[in-house]
View 1 (cartoon, rainbow, N blue to C red):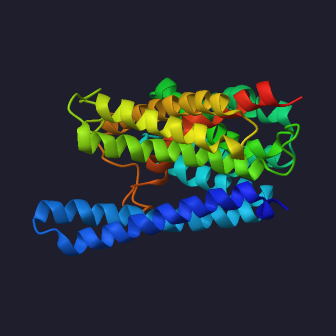
View 2 (view 1 turned 90 degrees about the vertical axis):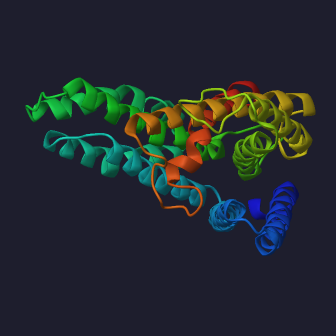
Length: 315
């Protein structure tokens, strides 16, 4: 069974150690800082660490239940992310029935296709059939005000929050020679690398950042943070090659690609938030904002990682 896999145990052990050390550091800093500004930074840091504990526990339970647990977890993740996205985009009465189809028909159907490993339909349901269905269903209502803008936003939200995210648990459907029963480890590897990249970019930016990449889109993203975080996360990806079907160099290259895609996802989502005039997509996760704030890197990284693995490492 997958929860007995040694590589998976080792990865979980490493994550647990990082969280324990972070919690101790956070507690020490909380008791030693004096200024109000420093206290605010540490309070935010500790809130993020507590949220990471909760998210890791939930993710661990999902992985230990096997493929179905992971599919259910990401299905709910897509649901809440799509809800946040749609809340920020103006819709009209004519869109309500279309949205019902999105949340209660297309979304669960997409994850059902993942669960039964129907790759052919999984890859085209949303970009082909849902793409054509959404505007048609909205047009039937006869509401044409801002029709193109409304349907484009709905379709874009469906692609990002459901289609792209569903590629993460879809890793469980891949039949990789010599890697039988270890797909949960590969999923954990992917999530760990892209999330560490986010954290390391933020940390390097705070410590070394001077030159901003896109100050009007994401003021906290700097070139120093970008280079430092991507480099460190890529190195970690290479070091964790033992838990994957990749060699060390292949793991480094793949980690680099998904880290770059994760950065692109974060920057794109930041642009959407600036366009909407908000700081976060929501408040569901303490210290992190909404679900969409936490999975922006997964949205862009998951489909690229999935197809790299499927194209090069499956029969």
